[in-house]
Length: 116
Image (spheres, rainbow, N blue to C red):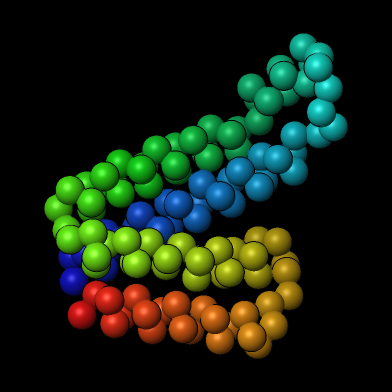
């Protein structure tokens, strides 16, 4: 049960990093080889949130891999797909079709089977 909890938290941070990266890229503006462009990137706080999320996910992942069997830990990382689908709906207002939800349910079922 502890592995599932840790993998859940790690997947949330991993998804959060991807979400922040998408938001940072959206706020980035048109690319240009100029000081103004790169200066704007240093004040784009989504990049900082992205880095913190990825570092936290990476550290948790290292702990999980050191502590638990790889055959159980690695498939649980796929829970990030579920959170990504939810973020697509809530943050980016994307449409998710039935077949995509079926895929998410299959992923969740696989995580359950692997963890037990």
